[in-house]
Amino acid sequence: MDQILRLIGTLINRLDGTDKKLDRIEREVHKIMATQSELAEGLKQIKEVLVKVEKEERALLVKIDELGAIIANNPVSAEVQAAYDAVKVQAGILDDVVPDAPPV
Image (cartoon, rainbow, N blue to C red; front, side):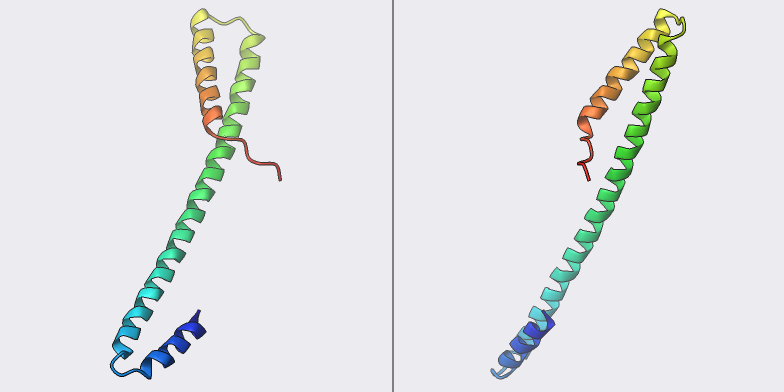
C-alpha cells in the first residue's frame, strides 16, 4: 500500500501544484485504514464477549439441569416446582437465542 502511495505521489508531484492534493489524499487513505483497523479490533472484542456469554450460558444451563435433578428426586412444594419450571422455560428461550458454537 505504501509503495502504491509513493508511486502515486511521484507521478502527481510531476504535475504542477498537485502535491497538496496528494498530501490530502494520503491523509484520507491513512484515516480510512486506521478506521478500518479500529473497527476490526472492536469487532474482535465483541466476538470475545459473545464467546464468553455463550460459555457462561452453557454453564448456567448445566446448573439448571443439576437443580432439576435435585428437585425431581426430592419432594418440593408446587410453588418451588412452578418457579423451577419458569426458570427452565426462560433458560430454553435463552438457549434458542444463543446459537450453539460450531464444531471445531
